[in-house]
Length: 271
Image (cartoon, rainbow, N blue to C red):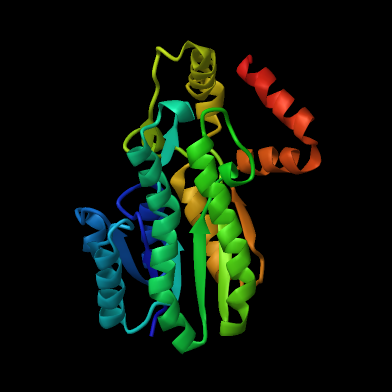
C-alpha cells in the first residue's frame, strides 16, 4: 500500500506544490483546505477535502475521511498559515487571536487529531512548516514571528517526546518564497495616525518590494523538494532550511551576536 500524507493549506503555494510532488511520486495525498476547489482533485490518489485549522470539527472529519479512504496517515504536513504584520498597537485583538489560532492552535489541534492514529501504528512523521521568521525577526512582525517562534519550540519539544512512539518531527524553514504571502496570506494593519511607526512601515515595504528581494525569492517547488527530503531521508534531522536566502540569513543569525545582526538588518532597511 502506498504511504499517505495529509497536507493542510493545500489550495496554493507550498501546500499545493507539495501535494503535486508527492502524488507524482505515487503517494496517496489528502489535500485539505478551507474551500475545496482545486485541480488537485483530478490527480490520481489525491483526496481533496475541507479542513479549516480553526474549526475542530473540520479537522476531525478530514482526518477520519483520509483514514477511511486510504487506510492510514503516515505523514502530517502542517502547512496552513498566514502572516500578520504591522505595528502591534494597531492590531485589534480579534485579528491577533486569529493569527495565533491559525498558525499555532490550529497546528496543535491538527497534530493532536492525528497522533492517536500514528501511535497505534507505532510510526509516523510530522512536518511543521515554520520560516526563517521562526529563528529571526523583521520589524512589524511581532505577531507572525511570535507564532513561528512558537512553532519552533513546540516542534523541538515534540521531537523529544514522540520519539518513544516511533514518530519523527521535522521543521522546514523557508526563506522568501514566491507565493501569495503578500496577498490573501498576508494581513497588514497600520494606523497612519500613529506617526512614530510610519518610518518603519515605509522602510520595510520599500525593501520588501525591491527587485533585489523579489529576485531572490524561491519558487514553492523548492520548499516542496525540501519537505520530500525531510519525509524520506530516514534521518533524525530536526531542521531543514529551504531557499538560498534562508541558508544565508540563518547562518548569519547563528554566527553573529544580537547587536551585530540586528544592526546589519537595520542598516539594510535604512533605520
